[in-house]
Each structure stands twice: as C-alpha cells, then as structure tokens.
Length: 395
Image (cartoon, rainbow, N blue to C red):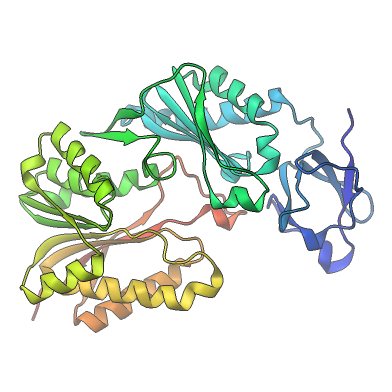
C-alpha cells in the first residue's frame, strides 16, 4: 500500500538539516487527519519532491523520524538489511568482547531502536511509537541476523511517555537468565539485564575501561559513581594495589562486589555507599590521596537550559577529585550528555584545575566505544566525552 505523504513548509520553516532524520512539528504543513500516529509516511518538500520516508507521531515535538532518504519500501526486508549492516560493522569487536551494542538507534538508521548483545542474550529497547509499531518485525530481524538464544525486551524510558507509550518488559520466546556473564578483554562482568540500569551495562565505556590498564599496576585507585564496578574491577584486574569504589546506591554495590569476586579481586576493593561529594570532602579532611581517580557521573544535564548549573557541578566535582590526586596522578573524567559540548567540558576541566591549584597534561581524549558510532550529520549521536589527565608534579 502506498504511504500517505506529508508536505514540508515552504521557506526557512521547512528547511531540514542535511542528512538529519528528525523533522519537527513546526516544519510540517498540516497533515491528513486520517494518518494514524506511528504510521509510515512519505515526506515531500513544498514543491512536492520526494525527501524521505519514515514514521509519524503528531503528539511528539519530533513528529517525523526518517528511516531513509531513498524512495524505497519500509518492510521487514528493509529492517533486516539495516540490522545486518550494523551487525557486520561490529564483528571485529567480538575478538575482545561478547557484549556489543548491535543497533544504536539513529546512528544505524533505525531511530527508536536499541539492541544490545550480552553473550547468548539480546536485550532490546524501543523508544518511539513508530518503532513500536514495527517491533514484531524488529524481533524477527534480531532472530535472523544476531541469532541469540534468548531475547529480552526492556522498553523502559521517560521518552516513551512523550511518544504516548507505556513501559514494557519481558521475554520474547524462551526465558533466559536474568544475570548474564560477559567478557571484556581480561575482565568478566555479570550483567543484570532486568534490574540493571538501561539494558544492564554501560557498553559505551568499554574503551575507557580497557585504557586503564597501563595506569593501574601497583596504584591506589578511586572509582566514583562506580555502578556495578566497571572501572573499579578493571583497575583491580590490571594490578592496582588498592581500589575504593563509591556509589550512592547500595543496590549497585552488591553486584559490583560479585563482579570483583568472579575476577578474583574482591580482597583488593573497598566498596563504599556514599554521595560522591560527601566522600571527597571526608577524604580531603583525612588526608587521603590516590594515584588514579575515575569520575564518571550520570548525566548532570538533561536540557540546554541546565548547562550553567551542570557546569558548576562538573567543576566542583573535578576540582575536589584533583585535590586528592598524588603527584603525577591520573584523573579519568567524563560527561555523558549531548548537551555538554566538548569545548565547554574542556574549559570546565581547566577551571577545576585552577581551583584545585593543579596543572595537568592530557594523556588521552575519550569518546564512546565503536559500537556507539558517531554520525557527523547527527550531532545527537555524540554524547560521551572524557579525558585521561596526568597531574604535573608539584614544584
């Protein structure tokens, strides 16, 4: 059946960002009221020329998410081609890990769909109404392309409410394990796919966790916002003499301790339930020092309007951490929000060093792992940024 078309407004109002799949409500002329939310539609420009094809939701400010800029059908064969291309790109990663993000939404041309593979289990997440209407076809593509033993849907997100969707969670087919063991280089982790945050594990920090290896041997390491111990356990496996892992949620520290145990480093790690700022203040008063500190907080900023207040939070946090670093110590610091531009984050780190009375050299600039590809025409795909900084020796 031929899709119905929606026309873009004329003039500047209807101009799209080149290669960007989002079309906002204000860029569209009034649509045919018979078009059901979530339907596949064709977008044409003011002159009636084909622009792209995607799905439509008039209840969202982002009213259209384009799936293609070509005049092609959107069916299960289309989804399978997209997923196969995404899977093929990730194949080299399986040499070092069995936990990989297979589909990263817009970055893989499948907006609203996240697919993560943890060993023999796939966890997928659907964030938009249009992709929800394609979910059965998406599951069939997961089966045919990724071929996992078990498939779990974990569609839990505040964005679903904006799209008019309820949260959904459950197995598709046979029930698998809710705790899945994965490997990441020399380190093993237990992923809690039901109770863990998002799909269960922060795969986007893989490269940064593995980058800790040359800095950890024989060192005292502090991991703030440790979640289930990704950085802390990695540092201990890489030879750290002592690791302190801090998180405000005690529920995360229990699986973190299990991760330490399965790697044989439980006796090297102290797990502390505490707010990061409170811990840093207490450690400063007691004269504690660390050779390596990891600062990987959850996003402080959910919108552009919060940039100023979030910047202060990042500055205060990093300056407090820098004060606890030994001479020639290493700070690994991150921000995971698209709304925090790298140039502003870099400036915040410089200000934090000035407040702390420290000077530093940049050892490494960090980005999200390769299975979270950055598409230059879609700046929203680039969100994780960070640095490994070496504190210069006191004069």
